[in-house]
Amino acid sequence: MRSTVHALWIATVPLSILIVLLGTSLTIAATTFDYQTTKIDPNNLSFYEPSITAESYPQTSATQVRNVIFCIGDGMGINQVTLAGSTVAGPGGKLYLERLPVTGLVRTYSTDSRVTDSAAAGTALACGVKTKNGMIGMTPDEQAYCSILETAKAKGMATGLVVTCTMSHATPASFGSHVKSRKLEPAIAEQLIDNRINVLFGGGRKYFLPQSDPNSGRKDDIDLIARAQTAGYTYVRTASELAKADDSHVLGLFQLDALTTGASEPSLAKLTRKAIRVLKRANLESIDGRYGFFLMIEGSQIDWECHANKANGAIRQTLLFDQAVEAAVDFALKDGHTLVVVTADHETGGMTLIGGGNEDKGDAELAVKWSTKGHSGTPVGVWALGPGATRFAGIQDNTEIPRKIAQLLDIRPFPQQKK
Amino acid sequence: MSHGRTILRVSATYHLEVEVGDVVRSGESIQKVPDTDELIVSPLSGTVESIQFDPGNHEFIIVIASQS
Image (cartoon, rainbow over all chains, first blue to last red; front, side, top):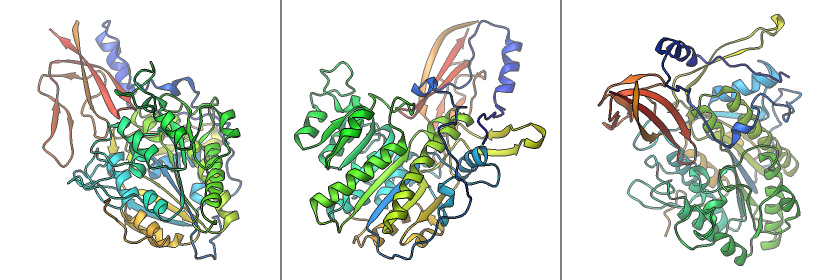
């Protein structure tokens, strides 16, 4: 395993020249990404244990889908996956997610652009309908559509959302809320609680605090944490509190803003394992265990590192996401009735791999070129395991993903207008 | 020499047509939204001093230092 990754920062070369040529006192910096992750060493990949084999996981013989774990890598294009995999396992190695036995491609365009954003793509993946960039859980004419999570809940299934962004960011929002703009995070947070989703793990505590709190991101007096507790949620803020949480509804908000994805917080994989335990318990408590659960997991910050064109950060975030996929697959293989679907909402950065180093010559550099700081319109991958997985093979539209999940769960009709 | 600085916030979804260090003129394109006629232009002439990604708002914060 390579512990250090060197990416070629092609865009910075002319910038360095420019600084010399100008010779002024201007402070010219490269595109920066001054978020909480800046305290984390992106070269340290020691947290990740690569798969010892590149063999595909086995296909299941079961046909009945009881549980669904839907994993979304935000901004995770095919090349982001390839780069992370080749970094930790060599060019012939695979990430855990690449070992899922069924693969396909997904087109991602939105109604107003061939380049989607996470709101429109999240809506497509959650509700099975296309919308405009920026809109959450509704079509461009503002008709709200039920998400696959909401329809699963209506069927009696336990539900959960696990992310590393704010809980009310575009992707989780698409599964549990309906608003005209992704920027309405306080309203989204309110809808997430009112939807009584069993598991809500992520960041963004500020949107759950009333404006009287100095850390609040709200402009009203609504205390969503108190509301959640009144509704029966156990509320946790730390890994140790999470470990003790033993309830059918758990609200875990581990940062005021997005997660740092550092060691001070439970990792996405740990959150995934805990979410599965809570959902299994919730399911057993609420019905008779027949109805299963729906869980969405997002590796939210792959996108953010790619916006900053930071290859090392993108690798690290992809590996953190892959660990969560491994946790999901571990459960699915033991359970036998769990469908795992892994995909991305879109690609970010227009990442191209233009070469790799020769390790035999002591040169392990990975050459990465970015074509943009924004999103791209390239198709993304989809990988599936479990009963019904073969339906995800081939090229498909992003709206087809939740429609196929709905068919497998016998949810009809889907898409479904919200009343 | 630089004088004032202007801060632009634009969507991070779409491609930026400027990079740090670029000299832009007033009215020059900063970002074109694909499949639309929407064009974000520089409100002043100057040098692109920094471009920062704001993940919370999913926007780029572009600082342009004006030139007299």
